[in-house]
Amino acid sequence: MTPRPHPTSPRLPSAHLLWGAAMAALLGCTPASKAPAGSAVDASLDPRTAVALPAEAQQAVLAEMRALLDAISNTLAATAAADTTALLAALAPAGSAAAADPGLEALLPPEWHALAERTHGGFDSIATAVRRNAGAPGLKDTVLVRLAEVGGACKACHEAFRVTVRPT
Ligand code: HEC
Image (tube, rainbow, N blue to C red; front, side):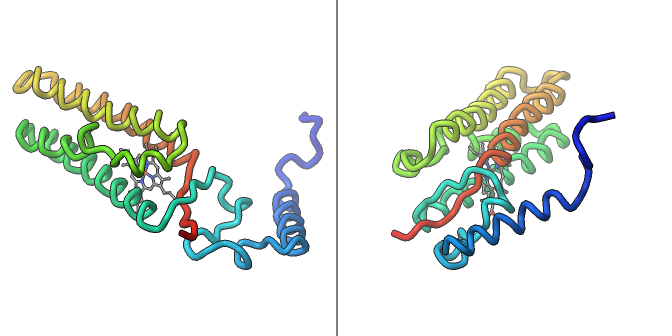
């Protein structure tokens, strides 16, 4: 038996949420009253660290993200087809050379940089392995193992951060 009372009671979190909303309303700081468009998400609904960016920078981050998803998808397709040329073409847009421009990077927190480097470096390391082992029988497994590691960095960052738009 656990010493905590009603550990799974659904009433506890909802009471907490209501209390938080009531306090926020009392203090005049509900997201709807203060936050600009695009960032009106209550921290109690999404507790990830909000990184507030100018609108263009926020869009640049999301565009880079979609490019990363493209890279994963294209990498998997090229790996399944054992097509080395397509594999290198799929990996390149997600490598360090194609990473965010320095002006945008300066707006992002240090923990973000570490996870971004792990992601881009992971794609670089897959490309290196592909060049070294082109045509080798174990290449498919190597790509999959390293791609799974990259996926861990994607997930870690998505669990830690969200982006919002701040007024310029
Ligand atoms: C350093 C942090 C970080 C890393 C690493 C990262 N992401 Fe993201 N990603 C984000 C954030 C922050 C968002 C926005 C989430 C939000 O605001 O709710 C996002 C959003 C996205 C989106 C949605 C884009 C849109 O248009 O809405 C996709 C797709 C995505 N990421 C794919 C990936 C993939 C695939 C990887 C790994 C290969 C990856 N991301 C790695 C931080 C990261």
